[in-house]
Amino acid sequence: MKEFSKKYLEILETEFKGLNLTRITDPDEFYNKQVLDSLLPLENSDIFLNALKEKGLLVDVGFGGGFPLLPIAYKYPNIRCLGIDSRRKKVDAVRRIGEMFHMEHLSVLHKRLEEVYFDKGAVVTFKAVGKIADLLTKIRTDQELYVFFYKGPNYSELEQFDSVLKDWELVEEKSINIPGTEGRILLGFKKKGNVSPYLEKSLVKLSSLL
Image (cartoon, rainbow, N blue to C red; front, side, top):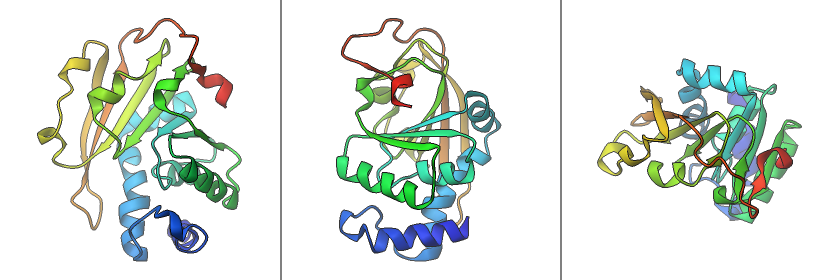
């Protein structure tokens, strides 16, 4: 993964320098705070890893500069990976980076979460994007979904999610040690029942985006 990290940073600092896809320019810091921070929460959680292998589909929402989407896609070429982001320039950049790494199992789309109906079981990830309660209430599905949030160590001081526990079960809350950082808290949720059992006409089916 260090060679991947080195090449990734070189691409961000050359071809896409003007887009500010990362503020980190030191190779070791980039490896720790972007690549390891994307992978270690997954690899230190049996629930996360087993769910991803079972579903075979990762949907990363709000991936920004490509995290955790691209490190996971690179490390797990047998997992179908889909990125959704509302910022077109970043979508175009991450699509191009994926092509540079020959990731044929990767797709990225210019969409908002609330525009998609999850008609297919998947593992959904959010890294440094919004609040847990706000994002979970935007998910429309009649399928079994696992949703994992990458949060900072002080997340509990900033947000509460008790209001969504009638629909979502908290299945993972784990502290992850990331070298060179303050660490990461991984929070995982599993859908209890039909969060939205009907398909609104304005929504796009996830299966049609793959």
